[in-house]
Length: 115
Image (cartoon, rainbow, N blue to C red; front, side):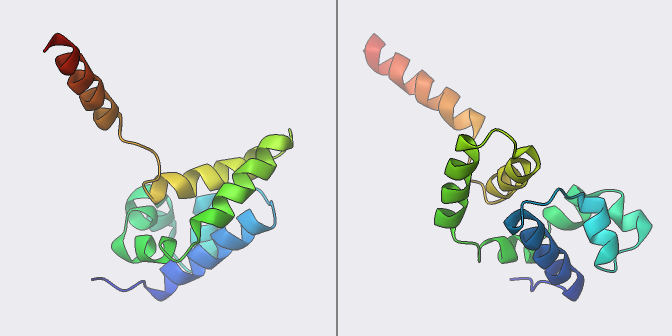
């Protein structure tokens, strides 16, 4: 399994810090601040967020903390950037169900009803 690079670790720590402090952030800026080139920072999803090393770092985050944060944000109207950050982390960790799974489940239910 791939290990996270120093730049991935720096970007990860900056991202977590921004989310923890309810600060708005831009992944391109975080990448540049972490030592990535301008060319690399142009596409954070391809060049950082979907890399195996970065995903390993995401696995270190306790989901219960994220869920508690989502709950507290849901009660507060003015936390858009923080919610976007939590949303991004949840997506990256694969915590949202796949659309195909839901469609497949509906097909199974319809088939059961037909039988």
